[in-house]
Image (cartoon, rainbow, N blue to C red; front, side):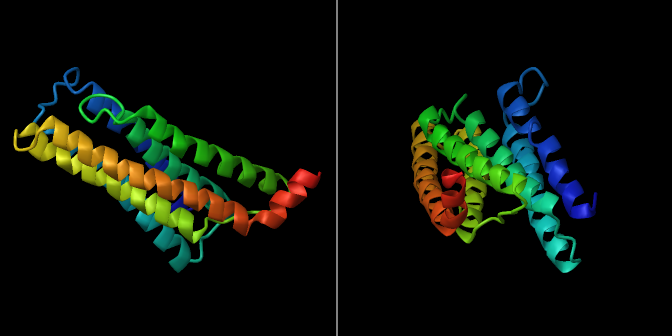
Length: 195
């Protein structure tokens, strides 16, 4: 357990507070005016730990097989949980868009697990990192858009339209990144299918 791996696990522990506060802000006595700032802090903290753990691991030569597997998993948990949260409440994203993310992560994780059982560690691809970056930015932007919405400067319709458009573009790229991932690892995939 080194610092990068600790930060990765910390991200998994922190992110459940995002849907908890978004969906139950009244229960916790959180003012609607302050809610977007709290949500942005939680999500921003998760993304910051993601940035730090990667930089720290590379700089201090603390890259581990555990980190290679768990860090992308933590990214997926964070982003998918945020998007699932946004299928509720004001944002009201169509749930089939989230299924695109979920299906992609399930397939890639299955391939990684199979390869790991055979002693092969598949690192994240550049397209996967771009996908994760896009998801993070979209989640942060939608959270920031809640500020003008809760202050009455943005209509619900505009908030929903912008959110759906951004998530749809990200979902399309997620499909592309999955195809690119399979193509890059076609040798391992053929070996698995053959056996």
